[in-house]
Length: 381
Ligand SMILES: [Zn+2]
Image (cartoon, rainbow, N blue to C red; front, side):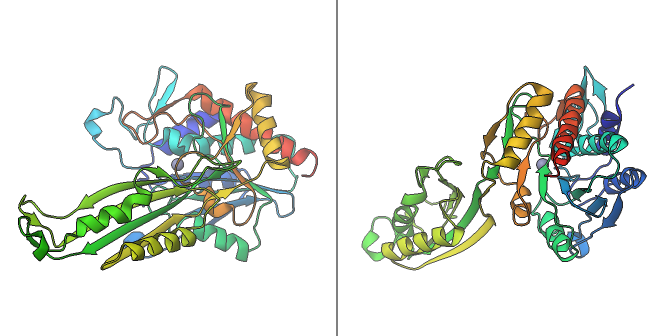
């Protein structure tokens, strides 16, 4: 008979909660958390097709206050026929749980709940524990954690610390805690010129010539030397397009896209200012549209990271390294209200066909989360 954590993970996988659909996953979470004595508040944000449901659940009203955060939405399954097991069946096979979201991150969310259920059996009235569960992490994340954090501030539910259960481990539970993430800045650049015959270039103005000069500082380069917590910031061109199929025409216009993954040496406005000055220096007409999807953040090494590393080591026997690698996560919103780290399942198969996790890992992760609670509440942190 599978453990409570594994059964709950299976039940969550059975909810088809591809963003923005809730698929019954938040209802299920709310039922389980109410049984454990949590006050549950549903927090729908956005309108129409963009409407997203979220769940904030808190047990206790006093401090200290520990929060877990995660998402129950999942990415689409891709080619359904390629899956060995129905991605929404919660199939257990060879000691693994298969399904969309098993790793990212319904297994982690189930482990939160199992850890809390165990913890409150022995220590029912120690401060507060909250779960911040969003349905909007995998898409634009406009109506999920960012809005929940605002609501938590207004309604005085700000925790002392928060652990996000994203799958941070590359191979084994105990490899990596993420204590920061890089920022992400995208640019769509359009440059206008004058179309003409390639044999008469003096009668045309080739916008590609200027584009190449403009892209020079962001063409597969490192922007700095990194710092104590981060690797160097990197920039890459992702698209160049002229819509020009003819080999004897100088195009009238070219567009390009590039993305910068940047560390805490920069703010997105500084990068934009620096690059626009460079574009101006190259000259000619240009138009840039910028999107900052995340600012970088770091939770510095200290009492909280020590405590989290200690809890992981106590259960797994392995001291996890602190890392700031990888894409953006919802921790970028939570860092604005309290110290945050991320620790979860093994992420190898996330977003893939046949996404799966070892069920033993779900149980071990629940033990790690339990140990985090024990250590946090032990000395009235
Ligand atoms: Zn995730």
